Length: 390
Image (tube, rainbow, N blue to C red; front, side):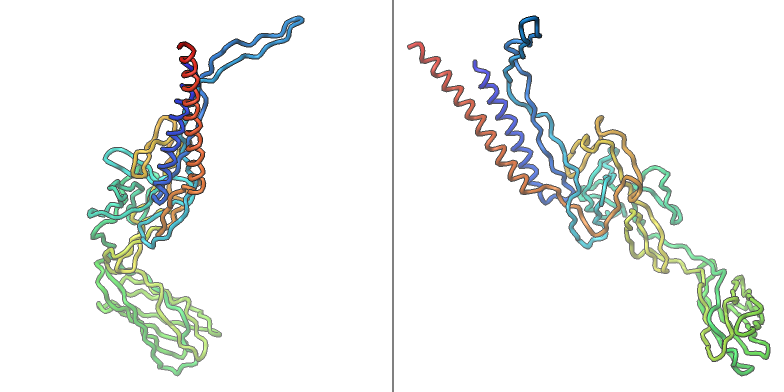
C-alpha cells in the first residue's frame, strides 16, 4: 500500500488533536484561572531508500534519501502566562499577581491551582468552589510561623481577643502656666483590669505657685499624687504618677500660658472582644478584626512554585498535581522572592487569546482538509493501479 495513505491518516489524527485542544481552550475562555494549551507536532521516523555515501578519490559523496512516514503529536504544552484581572469586590476572591500556585488539600492529596475563588465553609475553613481546603501557615497569639508545616486556613468561629490590663498611660498637651492658683483641671480615661472590667482613671490637676499638683484615682480606691514644676513652659521635674498599677507618664506635658490642651493618651489595656470581621492582605495574611478594636493574624496563605510548571498534570476543576517532571516544589508566603503577591477582591481570568485560537482553528481545519486530500489522491492512484488489469 502507498505510504502516503498512512501519512495522511497520521495527519488527520494529529490535526484532530489540535482541534480538540483548541476547542477546549475556547470552551474555557471564561474559566477562572484557566491556562490555555498548545499542540506541538513532530515528524515520525523516515524510511531510508538509500544511505549516505562518503566522498572518495574521483567520486563525490552522496546524501541519504529518506521518505517521511507522517506526523505525530510531540506534546501538548500549557501556557502559564498571567491572565487578566477581574474585580469582584468579594474579600475571599484572590488573584496571584506573579508566579505561584495556591496549595489546596483534597483528602490527603495536594492539589495546586491558580483559581482563587474561595469561601469559608461551616467549620470556618477556607475552601475552593469544589470543596478543596486552602493550605497555609497557622498563627499562635497573632504570630504566624512560616517555618512550620502547612495546615488548613481557618477563620475560627467564636474566636475571642483576650482582655489586657492597663499598665501605662501618657499625658500630653499643655497646662496653662498663667492660670490662677487653685485652678482645677480634670481629665478622665477608661482603663481595664486583667479580667477586662472597665473603670475610670481620673487625674486632677491643681494650679500651685510652683506649678501643678496632680492627684490620680482609679475608682477602686487606689490613688497617687505628684507635683509638676515648669520653667519657661518646659518641665523641670519630668514626673510620673503611679495609680493602682498604672504608670502615668507626665513628662511630655508643657506649661505655656493661655493653652489648656492637656489630655491622656496612649492608654494600653482592653476588654475581651469577639471576632466580627476579617481581611486578607497582599502577603496572604488572614487578619481578624475583634469587637474590642484589636486586629490579629489568624493565618497566612501559602503559595507553591515549581522548577517546571509545564510539567504539572491537570486533574480538572482548574487543579494541577505534581509529576516526575514538574521539578522540586518550593512552598512559601506570597511576596517572598520568586512568588507573586495577592490581590484581594479580584480573580485571575483565563489567559486564552480568542484571536489566536480562532486562527488555530483555521490552521487545524485546513491541515485536516489537506491530509484528507492526500488520502483521496492516494486512493485514486490505487484505483488507477487496479484498472491496469481489466
